[in-house]
Length: 134
Image 1 (cartoon, rainbow, N blue to C red):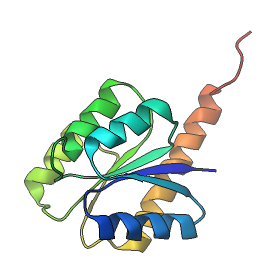
Image 2 (image 1 turned 180 degrees about the vertical axis):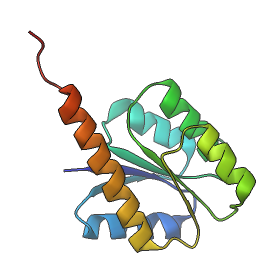
Image 3 (image 1 turned 135 degrees about the horizontal axis):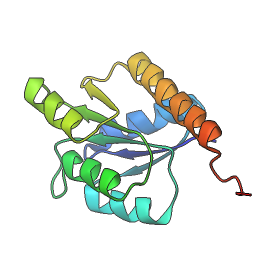
Image 4 (image 1 turned 90 degrees about the vertical axis):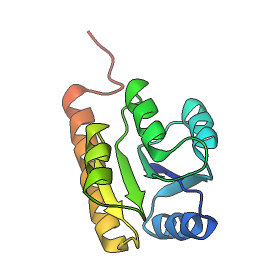
């Protein structure tokens, strides 16, 4: 089963995303801030991360940079209520795999997740993830 971590400080949005993803057949977990998210990422495997940009403490940009720096290998979708060209450019510069502005259009989110998970699975099959060598 595909495991997705939602990082969102707004409780209502966090629950909406978690419920939507669960209904779509994903195993969804959540964190209310960046510090909690990094602890979960260190302890548990996830296939994809959805993170808000503006949060107290560690921002979504901080999370994105940490995931890429630690080479955790999962795609990251950035969501924000404060979008625009500059936020989009900063997200892409930090190698975000997807970008959506709030209010979230759940069908767009669903399509983006399917595309990223499918792409990740193809890569894993191609490179033999968890396959013994020799």
